[in-house]
Amino acid sequence: MPAPLASSRRHWLLGAAAAATAAALPAQAQPAATPVPPASPLGTDVPISAPRTEFVYESIVDIADMVTIGPGPLGERRIVPITGGEFAGPGLKGTVLPGGADRQLVRRDGARLLDALYELKTDDGAIITVHNQVLVRTAPGQPRYAASHIRLSAPDGKYGWLNDCVYTGTLDSLRPKRNAVLIRVFRIV
Image 1 (cartoon, rainbow, N blue to C red):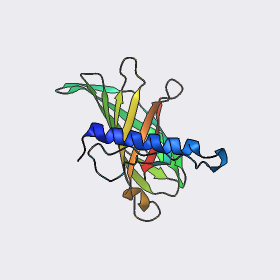
Image 2 (tube, rainbow, N blue to C red):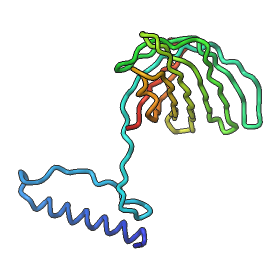
Image 3 (cartoon, rainbow, N blue to C red):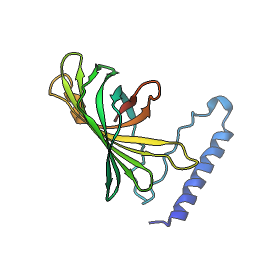
Image 4 (cartoon, rainbow, N blue to C red):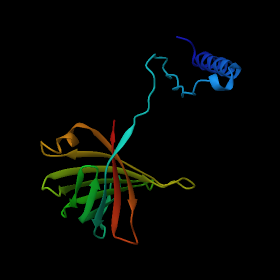
């Protein structure tokens, strides 16, 4: 296997040669540029392709005031009761049922680990369970990071397709306008 430096140089030289060849063609004969995927850092011939996502739904989850339950060995523990809300997306619409909760751990480094479990009820009566685990981190001088891994559990039938994918999401606060959070859910395809 070639050394990583030699492999990088080879890819650069091949790219430079392709660019020089394309520049030599008449303007109307130049092919459209296609992005070249990065080379495998381990030298495999399997191309690197980033996952794509598709929007599934967004929800506004109403929450009650946070309840602090005290320190633990990993940090400060809290619970945020879920009181309701609504959700909608292509082929999905309904309400967020009250009774769920978001258990939170504020780590010693300031990052927050959120672990929410709650249910959605579609307009036609199906109940979908949502388990949303979020990492929220705000480092000095950096933008806020809030990304999640979401598991959905739906009944067989019309919404059964929700059981067969991996989901990721984002989380944004709607305060002070509303005591709620906005969650957007994406299917990894």
